[in-house]
Figure 1 (cartoon, helix red, strand yellow):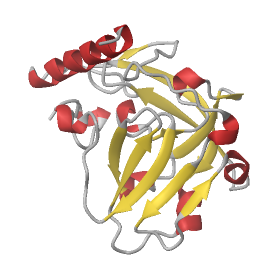
Figure 2: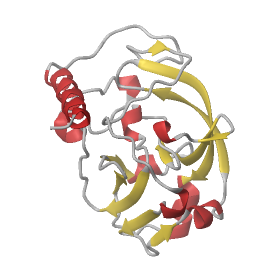
Figure 3: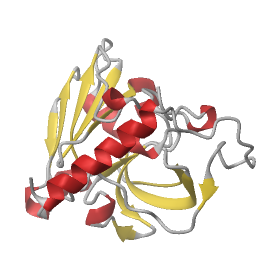
Figure 4: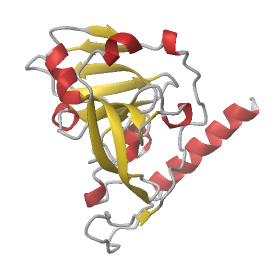
Length: 214
């Protein structure tokens, strides 16, 4: 096993152990804006599966598949032609840190939904990423007004380590739901738990309810 693969397996094993032990800080007090059990940071810690994919801009694409009227595949040029939005939101990570006032730019999921038109039978979305990561959300959460497919953070293009060129930003959920390096979004009638969800993490992940582990 390579050193990189070994580090990845250790990271996964550690997080699985936390989930098995129901690690959390349930009952902790919180300021009005800070969810229970969270601490405020000013930096942006880098968390992933230990693999940071290199995606040449000319090779990046995002496929929209499943229960939609107009399946699509965007490259960066066609993605940039979709309506662009700017939003500010907070990050809440399951590892107990939060960061306020993150300024994002990208494509609102509501504008994407208007473009691809989910069928009435669609109830869930599954995100697939270039590093093999997956995670899931109800379609109702994906369609929230503050959810974005982000290309920029703090007025600069998203760096590779933080999920560039495009990542999901779903601020009402712990940030593992905001998939980095997103490559495919599948609309489905049935839920399909993702990478961490099948390893003991909560399926919905509401920070205000401390839904860290299932």
